[in-house]
Amino acid sequence: MKPGFLAKNPSVLAFLALLALFTLAVTLLSTAYGAEIVSTSMVKTLGKTLCLCLIAIAMDLVWGYTGILSLGHFAFFGLGGYMIGMWLMVARTREIVLASAAGVLPMTLQELSDAIATQIFGVVGSSELPAIWHFAGSLPMQLIFVVLVPGLLAFLFGWLAFRSRVTGVYLSILTQAMTLALSLYLFQNDSGLRGNNGLSGLQNIPGLAADQDHLSVWFLWASAVALGLGYLLASFVTSGKFGSVMRGIRDDEARVRFLGYSVESYKLFVFTLTAVIAAIAGALYYPQAGIINPAEMAPIASIYLAVWVAIGGRGRLYGAVMGAAFVSLVSTWFTGGRAPDLTLGIYTVKWVDWWQVLLGLSFVLVTLFAPKGLSGLVDLLAGLRTPWRGGTPLGPDDGSLREEEAVE
Image (cartoon, rainbow, N blue to C red; front, side):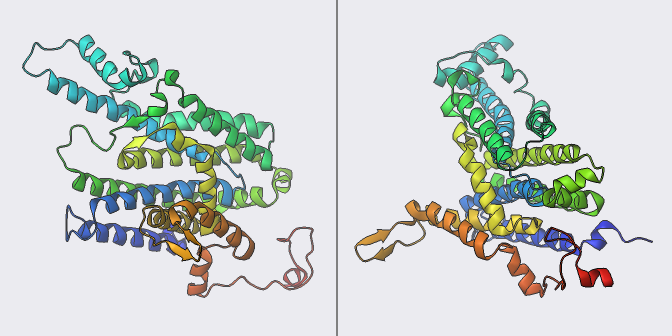
């Protein structure tokens, strides 16, 4: 009897166990359920960090395992946030309108719709709900759109790019251009998504009579479940034959194509799948952040995402999680004013201003001197070493079979 997937991948069980213990510990230490040691704002920060870890896994799948350096995955992350944010705004505004009309004549459906539209779009000088908001009052439909809209955009973009065999830096530029075009479009007031104002008040969940203390913990649970399922799915995808083909495409795309594999189909599947994963992460992230606007989808955000994965160690799922968690929490510490200023004679380093420089420097140093990133520390602690492969390579690539291996 062949061992199951989890039996062959004990690291997955270890990750899920650590995630469960972390979630339980935060819950017990939270203001809502325990010792009031971890504040509500910190619980939200940790919940958002778990969402960033999930999109980092998506980035590692598409870049670390398949070799597609996408600089546009935060666009899918933002679209997921917009899809769920539309329902949150409509449902919350409906409650406000109905509460204000209590005690007067009942409102007709048209009057209610007009009042909701005026409340939401009055800030951009409109009193009508755009056509794209037609299903915004339906939670099931918006949840479908969380997956459908980013997935369809990724599929169309990937189909056009991959069938044209655009690769390398040119593909990275195209993904960045897609993200820039989308963010610039959303900045316009007539985009139907409130332009630069974005969607706000997302932290209040309509229909739930719960305070922010409890909501923050519930979202932490949801984010942890999503991260656990995402890690399990990514581990399954990267194992076996499919994972081998992904790595083959990353290392030598021409050779994989010569062997008869449909490289474009593999790349399109991975690109679309990771876009959906990123969108689900965004749909969980922005209700915890409370607001989303087009600036969240700027190309620089996707560049940061690549930096997180590189610092954690690309090509390793736990490395992506480590990188995203480390950068997110350290960034919160530096930019939140908690890090003390560093006085250097005539100049004082204020970390709020210098944090991005430090992040960029860390990326350069990791790339040059520690390509395994933070995940290399796990190897060191576990006593894992790269096997020595002696002899002259029998092929032109670094991964080629070597003389002494051929003899064996």
